[in-house]
Structures are given as C-alpha cells and as structure tokens.
Image (cartoon, rainbow, N blue to C red; front, side):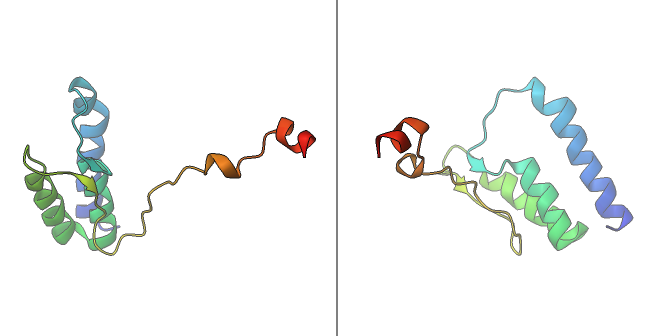
Length: 96
C-alpha cells in the first residue's frame, strides 16, 4: 500500500472509530460508506478509490433505495446465513 493510500485509510478508520459512534446509524447500503471507501482505496488505489468513495456518499440520499453495493474489482462478499432447514440439531439427529 502506498503512503497516500495508507494515509487515506487511516483517515477513514479515524472516522469509523471516533466520529461515527457519535451519530445514529443511517446506512442504506451494505457495506457502509466508510467500509466501501477503505475497500475501494485498497483495491483501486488512492485516487480512483477516493473518487469511488465520494461518488458512493453522493448516491446515499433520501431518494436512493440503498442495497448491496461493492467497489469495482472488489472480492468482498455478502455473508449469507445458513438455511434453517439445513441445520440439524441433536434432537433431530436422534429422532431420525
């Protein structure tokens, strides 16, 4: 990671740890804009990643539907919970 990317990432982490807890959660998108910014900078570099992060923040407005939105070229995934039907509890195993 180059020094500019490192600095920008630290700036976003400062926001996540100090400023964000002081405000109510209002995220319409997954991942949050700050997590999106860190991933965009990591994957696409300081300049392009910052541009993508700014564009993401501009898209977050009262008229947007939100949803799942990952940075381009990212390998992030949505954690999918297991299907309850696929979970076998010990009671079900004994009854089989």
